[in-house]
Length: 341
Image (spheres, rainbow, N blue to C red):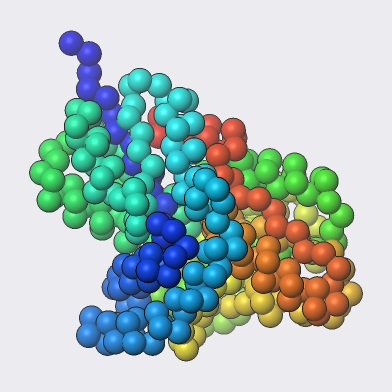
């Protein structure tokens, strides 16, 4: 009798079922009520989400999703499912791959149920977030563990960690960026990462005194910031700068997608853009190595809103470097991470 296949769960963050307000409201509620996303006591989180954030943002968010929606559906979901299909082809019959979402569908529960029905003998869980954060990585791992327990799955489970250091990830993003940037004329590149509240970064500093204590706290990796999301973004940039052969002064690092009145990690991408325009930068490129698939934050926030902001500030053109999506190099990199587990 042949050995049982290995299950592979590829997890991305999520997307509404459609850009209709009712589906966007449902998605925002599920996402924002996660205590690892908005880390405040449950009662106050419920009030903040349901009485302030959703009423203020749901129409705007629905319009943003409509602006990027395709005939096939949500770009993030389309890319994610295609990645899962191609990784399955690469890995072959000894593996069973499911591409799922932490929020929305296809859910982690559904993916696990399908893998159980196919008789997998062990499970590899890969949260597709290059840098670690409690709001994305840990939340996805916790949700997976919850459903593994509820479904009574009895098998070895391997959770893969953040992978910004993986040569395959760096090479894949480097290839995508090189291919795109060779076809456009630009003079400056912004590496734009999703932001996090400062308090979530400070929580993971075991010393309580290093992270965000100075502007240079992420310039060098030390024991205090090895698990710091901001530091990992800086380290990601360093690796990609080397891979792309960029010269000092030709690139910047920024953080986007702030929400609410709390302090968020800096520098802000939307502050860098007018400053660069004021310095005479006319043609700007932006890539976001925090996202492995193009989504609302890249297609709407960067390619539409930040492009408009740059042009209104005097710039001529802003180019969005595509994400990894289901490119061949990325498929190979994901498959290799799985095979090495």
